[in-house]
Length: 192
Image 1 (cartoon, helix red, strand yellow):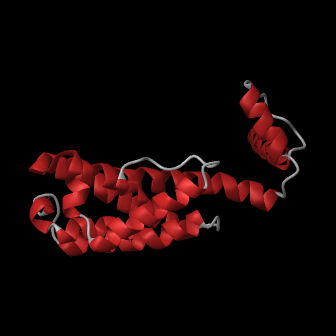
Image 2 (cartoon, one colour):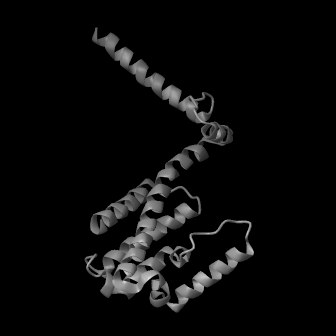
Image 3 (cartoon, one colour):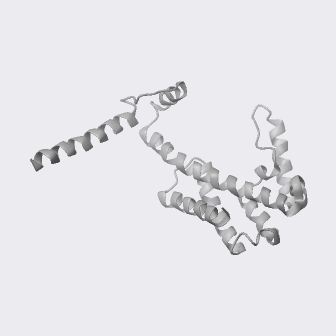
């Protein structure tokens, strides 16, 4: 009796694995419900398995990065506004290098009008590392939110390395994905 149950369970597990493998390789279509999902499936069916499976893993990492980076940007914007700087805080608080970077990037976008640009706030034209500088350069405004400046600098610097791997469409090692997730969790726990 136990042998029969074991064989039944083993066949079920093996069958599930085979179905998933066939679906991933594009040989077996999963039920597709929307036009967009059908188009996406058809687009990726001829792509090598390594690239397809890598893209699925990278989706998670990109999502973590997107949330983390935008939480930092939103926090900086809100904190400066709450400190009394209003909507023009960037003009008062950004370094001349930051302002120059924003100007150059906006000019580049103007020349390439065929491409939809970024969020119009100057904060979205800065590099991730610039966000750390905004906080540490104005520590009096941010000191109540963080243990020390090193806390900010280390998390953003480490996450920027991960960000660059993701932005250049390289596969991210699992431990680096976990580190990014840890930094995001740290940020959420610290700032709220």
